[in-house]
Figure 1 (cartoon, rainbow, N blue to C red):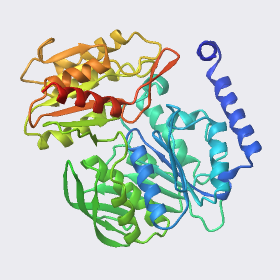
Figure 2: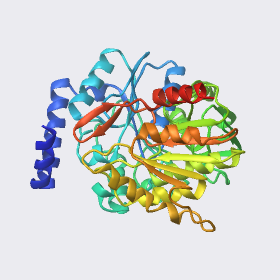
Figure 3: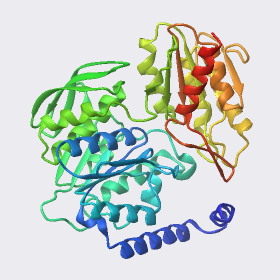
Figure 4: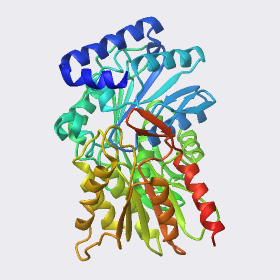
Length: 445
């Protein structure tokens, strides 16, 4: 069936495929009774940070006493029930999505927080969902194999904001947008109409009443602490999530909480309750004398942010393990190799999700960027960087080369449960495998 779909995509015009997706979404809405019309719907879009923002918003709403549903790359939630997302899709198909929303409505959920991708917006998978809050995290290099260029990619994400006030209004619910002012695409998104607008940024002056500004920022590997100035007052915030980029994610969630008239006290508590987002800057501890972080980062910008955050905090060397997915944006592969080698002391390039591509070719494309990473040092194959096809062996090799106070950063898979080879989904729980390999490493000592 997958091969038939791939063949049809190549021969059918794009307009027909989009019409087919829209027809599916319309039918899905009809048979499930348009459940989204009876809840407040929050959509989070952006290249990076969506999953974290969805989980933070969900925690804030739950803390404030609202029964909440959420859909993200890594997990689903309906009330107190949380379970992994097994689909390897961020925004699930229209039938799955409408069925989920119907279940959430039957469970008396007042809110649904949906991680909403550019693909889902263009392909009409979210047709019939009257979003009430639209959130933008950022727009960076990704999915150009599908969108062709950054302008079209930005416009695809803009559909969430463009449609914000086009759907039916719910009694007493304002249409709200929350946009990252630090992102270069801010002005494009800010132009769209909404009843309430919030901008958020790190540092600088609070120019307007609709701005949230983080000041007195401090962060390390254990979390971040900052002061946030909001239209409703100033407060100190602590988040267990490390990294400057997570401060930005936290600001987005705070803005959503404020838009729903939630007291800052509950917003702070909700943020503090999110100790980690699985597979996002997740530390793995098995008693080793070096640090290990597993992260989902699979774009140039996400990788840059990971290494910018960790580099100043590492006393030893940084060992990077990365790959790139097949059947996706090929242009970014050498860029990713260059970015990682700029920050890391040792780079290991390995297999990730090859899909229908030759994994060795993907590895070569990532590796092509490695020698360009450092300006003053030429990294050498077989000494400073390695190409290892077997991902388990690549991680094993990283641990064997790690010394006290070093950091091993393993990116690309995060909390995913599968590796896709061709049409086959092979079980792959990276965090579990990392723990197994750390135990094996310690047993050899």
